[in-house]
Length: 477
Image (cartoon, rainbow, N blue to C red):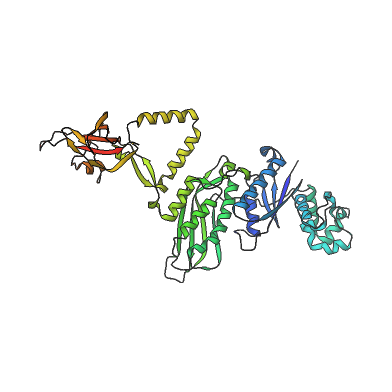
C-alpha cells in the first residue's frame, strides 16, 4: 500500500538569530529526507516523501518516523535553532498534505475522514474558496458529488485533476529533489562586511546547509573551503579563502564551525566582502551515520570535545607550530627515538591509533603492554636534553662521588648512520664521527639515585687515539 509523509517546519527562533529561516529550514528538511527515500518533493510550504519502498528497509512506518524525527531534532539542536516540525501521513501525497494543513488549523485537533477534509486543504481549490463556500461545497466529499463536467466548466480541469490525484486515480508527477555530488553554495550578504569575524553569520548559514547535505548523502566531511568575494572597486585580489581540514569525517559540524571561527578571527580583510561561497573538498561515505553524529538518542550524546578536536582547535587558535605531538621514530639512538612534530599533521595517525586501540581486545592490549615493558626495561624515565660529560676516576665515571655499577653493558651500534646537523649524540660528546658506538650502564650514586650512563667505544683512526669518555644520559624514577 502506498505511503506518503508530509512535513512542515516552523522556525520559532527570532528572525536573524539563527542560521536558518523558513525557506532554509524547508530545504534542509528535504535534504535530510533524502536519507530515507529518493522520492522527495517540495510542494508549497511542505516537504513530501514517498516512503512506500523504504518501509521494509527501516522496519516499518513507526520506526522510520522515529528515526526521521530524531535526525531532525539533532540537526536543529546542533544549529541552535528552535523549530516545530509537523507531519502527517496518507495513502497519497495530497491526502498527507491535506491532513498536515488540517492539523495546522484551529479545529485540527478533531480527526476527520479524508472525505471530510476542508476545501482549503487542497491547493487547487484555494482560488475558488469563496464560490465553493456559497455553493455549499465545504469539504472534498461535497465537490465529488457534483457532476464532473459542470465542475470542470466552472472551476477548471485542474481542480478535478487534483481530486483524482488525491484519490489515487491519477499518478503523482513531481520534480524529485536530487543532491549534487559535491556541495557548492554561494550566499549574498545583506551588507558589506569589513571584519573577518563578522563573516561567521553568513558562514553559519552555509554550514547548516552543508550539514543537511551530508545527512542526506550519508557522508562525513573531512575538508572544506570557505571563499569570500571582495568589493571589486578596490585594487585588491577578487577573493580570499581558507581551507579547514579535520582528522575524522564528521556530520555534526559544531566542531567544524568552531574551527572556521578560529581561522576567521586571525584573518585581515583587505576590502569589504559582499558574498561567501562554501565548497566541500573531501567527504567520505559513512556506513553508520548514527555513529558519525554520535547518537540519535540525546541521552547518550558524548559531552565535551575529544582529544583530536581539542588539538585541532588549539592549532587553529595558536598556530600549527605551537601545538606539537610526540611521534616515535625508527632509530637505535635513544635521544632520537622520538621527535616532536606539529600536531595538526599527526592527527591522522593519532585518530587511526585510537580506532585500532578500540578494535583490539583486552588480551591483545595486555600482550602489547608486556612486550613494551620487555623492550624498554632498561630505558630511563627521563633523558637529559644534552648528555653531560662526567669526570673519571681510573676507568670509572664519577658523579657527586663514586658510583656503583648495577647493570651493563647494553651495547648500541649506529654504525654508518649519517647523523643530521645538530644531532644530540654528536653534540653531547663533541665528536666528529658520523656514527655512534656506545655501551650503556645503570649506576647507583651515593644518594641512591639510579643513573643511565654510557661510554663511547672508540674506533681506531689513523689520526690519533682518544681517551674513553663517559656521559650521563638520563635518570630512572
